Image (cartoon, rainbow, N blue to C red):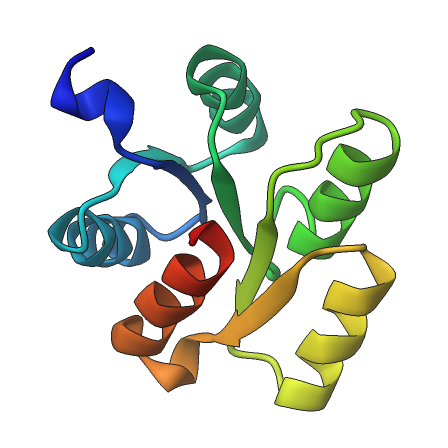
Length: 125
């Protein structure tokens, strides 16, 4: 097996190219293989092709709310890998949405990339 196949795979779904790039760099520095998607079509294509070990989903996107995506993945698609919601929403609102969507947790974008990486490590260890 190559080193790439041994690394845990994280799929990031966010409508901001800048957020995708910064988050991808932070997670790759932490040792993860990272794939990104800017829209639902790309998200489904990438998800099917890489079988991620964890999915990060932005909550506030123009095409779909991330908590709806997480809920659909859990319910209709039977996805069991950890899902983290990411947003600038108030913590209490983000926590509620994560719980209702059956996501494994949430991270405020305001908490920074270091906290996001910590939560990913926590869920994948």
